[in-house]
Length: 312
Image: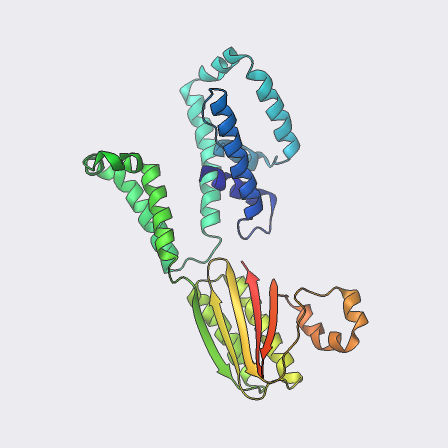
């Protein structure tokens, strides 16, 4: 968990448009941490872990180049051969150590708050964060209660940090049940229905806990899909739009009877549009806005479904 938090903070530092954790680098960080612990154990050393304080220093100075890490790693390897040099750092006055802890800790706390508040706070997330913090703080308020618990649970209830962390994990798993919710609307293909579709998407995003920029992105795309179906007269009757959202994906589906609307699975490049002019004329307005992260168009008999996925 410490490594995951450190890697996510590093992602946020190096990407001004960061919106969600990138799992590939998290997997690499956890793997590197595990290999480091395994090697240290084989050599009879101490357990290793990522250092949040070092990330706090990087955030304060703005120095996040991996070349700096390689140089520091080299010097640490050299200094490891001279254990008495560590005594210099151990001899630092507690006032200096405390000031350094406050300095780096401040950046890590604010970074954690920023990560938490990046997403819209719905009731579930409010309970997860609020209850976990309250249970953790209760360790300092009523320590005798936690001391009276059975011995087998003391590894979990033995500190404020473990109580809050375990509570957050368990509550997150519990509240994941039924997280994906769905809202839908059926509209006729006419000029007055476009506003109904975009309004439904915006209201659905708010009630489902999606961020405002994501709601605007999906609503704009829904309007473009409706416009294409209307201009090409593809629907033989009403069009049903449904929206569903979990913490990572906003899914928009348009279902209708008629002729299938063909959209490329990825945003076409400009030269592709030039090569197929009739198609580009119908899709040009759609591409001026935002294109979904994944597109799936399928038809069974006369029932057509256009499924659009937007990654958070």
